[in-house]
Length: 488
Ligand code: AMP
Ligand code: MG
Image (cartoon, rainbow, N blue to C red):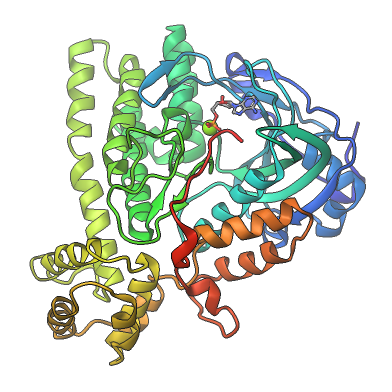
């Protein structure tokens, strides 16, 4: 089959050509009644895709995997992964397909990928399907992350399939079309590690270098340079999550990319009040992936990547371990530097402002925040008003030690924070949990309006606009404890 000619889409099959051992050619399940729920027109345009052709039946065929463009070889990708610390040697795309690689008009290469497109040979006990709610959730959160300037996979469209999905109840099914720099994961390297095939490992590493870190190819030690580049990208990424109060929720090694993009928005959530122990996922009883643990988990996952790469780092195992350990030893400083620079920016100071003056202020502020229920996002946003001389909104939000807050504000204001810069760093609109739930419940019942309004707010998060006040406000008191679910 070929896709409607208006789309004129050509997809490469580079992954399966270069790494056939990691790919199972497969096709999507037939979608009985595809119905477009949301299409990301700016992203489609950026990719050089024709928006009206995507909305036409041939476009929906592409977005559900039912029509395969010329030259494409859709595949389920194999990968392994540590899930909550336990190793699974064979996970892979149980309900997803890589359609192929797409080159946009500016020459950048992206994976076009589907989630919820039916069972694959990696499905194990799963049904291969996805429900409308969780796919729209990934759409909302990934597009919000992108608008916040945080590296992430993007969402191109969500198409309702017309098929029901059995979870605790029967839910409407959907397919998400996702775009990513690639879908290489730490777990992809672990999968090859289990095969013990050093030639394949080298091909995978070369593929990763070529797609994400071409400068590593000319480094004195390309594979160590690859590892160091992934480490730097992840240190920066996780710092960005921490600064906006994002809790990924399932930082298994199969959910950590080589590109440094955030991926797999399952049980993720933004915290409401500041809480280092914030956990939302219903299955994370031990809090392994709690807010404050994320940098430690990232480091742990990177150690797993380093182990998988050892045969490429040096022929001598001891020397290979020494190289990896030396590199990993720099992670904490890299993460700390990214986080400190971000916190300085949130408080209105340039990156070169004296750390010894600003960082104690950051610590004091976080200690104050931990003792209040103040909405984390709203609090930082309203500090911008305080920097312009109106401390009213900050005080109104803050239910704790008002005198302590005043003392802190005076010390901070004395340093002359830049309120305009703060408004470019501290968002007004994020996908707050109660708003996401409201939009998903309505969409599941067929009403897409709340979703549209929420997307309008979170895709321009730094520009406060009249009429969107409720999107800039924390959860109502009666919202209660928020719980999220995996693999839905
Ligand atoms: P995740 O937690 O979404 O990253 O998924 C972990 C693993 O479970 C991956 O290998 C997924 O492909 C697989 N998986 C999750 N949900 C399903 C499902 N409904 N059917 C088949 N496989 C699934
Ligand atoms: Mg995953």
